[in-house]
Length: 293
Length: 282
Image 1 (spheres, each protein chain N blue to C red):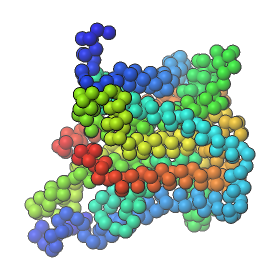
Image 2: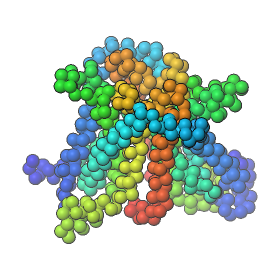
Image 3: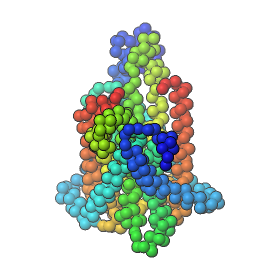
Image 4: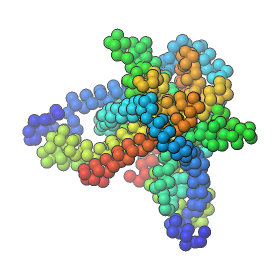
């Protein structure tokens, strides 16, 4: 718009303007982008910590040391401790099969792995209620055998595993596909076994992507709200994870306590982002080399 | 299984472990994802057409779907515009704090939705940080559809930026130089040389942001006010039906949501294929 109407011969008093915008346009675009990010991303993050510490450190820790809140923190750690390793093992197996071998139906399999991302978290919880709920397909059988899945910890774990299912696999598959199979083939032809090849060749090649995938998976596992909300039953002190405890405290008008719990999860998010960023800065060259750009 | 049958399925390789890895992958995928999702289809088909349409055409269901898809489309469109500007600035310009801002783009991926939900409500509530300045002007954001829009813009932004960024980084600057050498001014170069390469990833990002926004629950319920017919989203209506032990109602709404999302994503996919062919970049 700025350049409109200027004859081509006069358009570039300075040659560098050929591949960038005028200074005024640049400053304007930077201002728009920075304002948008500060307002939409940074303001909510700052709000969490300001609201959490609004009435001082004493109130903050009092909010966190409530019995139900401590129970919710413990449950969240348990859920993550089960679901993250499960999806880690799956991610390694899936990426090994998909990236190191050529077989029929591979693209279908890759699409199916991404399926949980296109399902609403609420629907993710719903499907387990349909299976294991009191009126679900297996409900009567579970009732007879006194097995509790819905409104109990197993249901929360299942819903969390579903929601965080693709994270590790998704980070690993594209990277391992780009790396190809030559190094593994060389190792095997020199006499290394499958386990040795995997541990000494494949794993070191993908370790940073693996770490980032696990971190994202963990952040989502600890922070999942919609799916867990459907299957939890909201039994205080028993089936409430941290995000559900935030909701309860917030609806009880215990704002400081709600934001205190929220600040812990926000801190986890910040650590996740920090590690990711450090990995990118520190290993930018190495990652680029692995991706063979 | 005979050797010949096995080799038609998988290309022979000296690397071991294919059977174990694929077997585990398929078993785990079926147990956790495919089998549970199939119950959704099974339950829906057991409803019968008459019951299904009764739930689908219920005014409250229709209103919730309209709100969910309408506001999600709007949020994805806003993100497409600002996401393009943000990506452009992050990739092309040097300024202090650029790397830090770049790192913060992923915040909505990492921040739990319930945390975002209460933070956004604290900001935009009538007595909140921003809300108190807007209240005297008669503008209400929290507890209105506008609040839903704000939450969906927040969670959708990284999808656009992270899809556009690698494409813009890999774009050959020499093409722009050539365009300038041939007499195009900067705006012409951007519109006719740069943008055609950015439209396919922009559409992908739009589709991802849309898909995420339609299903979003945690960040929306706190700020939406959840008034039926006004600011009640479809995922919330599923939960309400479940709390009424109306499994059929909840299932039907979930299935309709999935079907509409699928059609929308398919349409965007086709549009993307068409633009890629039309604009002729690989």
